[in-house]
Image (cartoon, rainbow, N blue to C red; front, top):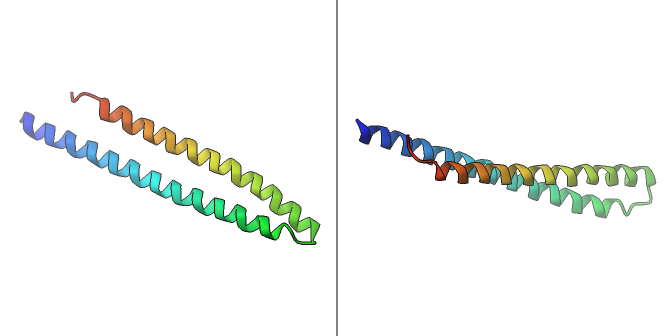
Length: 90
């Protein structure tokens, strides 16, 4: 019976690790997309339309904050995965 319980715990641990990696991959893609949007909007802000330029600049500030939040979430997921890998089976 202990072997079966160990297999189940091993499966759950691997499942959690895979889920964590998937979340990190999704967040990385979102960060890359957001960075791309910032760069694209920088080119657009060089437009003579001041209202549009100001709006895009404000949006880029929000995007930078979002990147920071996503990076923190990645660190948190990584820490959780590390903590779980150190846990001893019960």
